Length: 88
Image (cartoon, rainbow, N blue to C red; front, top):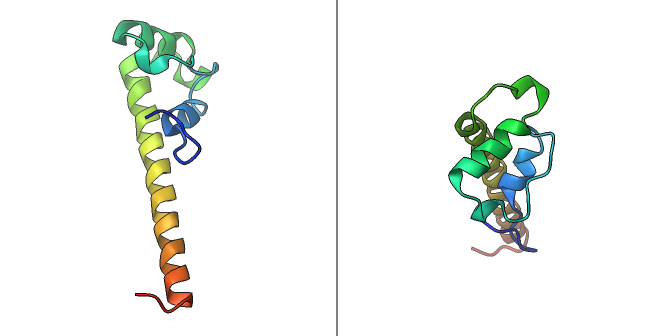
């Protein structure tokens, strides 16, 4: 998913926890081999030697968690506002 003002690029944000380099702007257009090579070559030291597929899985896992946390937070906030305004 491309980042917009309303929807952050959770994958890009999550990748910063596992990579020593920032993802290229066109990472979504990269072919699988080039993308996996990038992930492998830029793995943060504790993840050196991991395959690109394994790196992708842990980055995706964190990005999904981040998105779900934000979605749940927004829902809870909306529920609180509805309750405060007595809106059903």
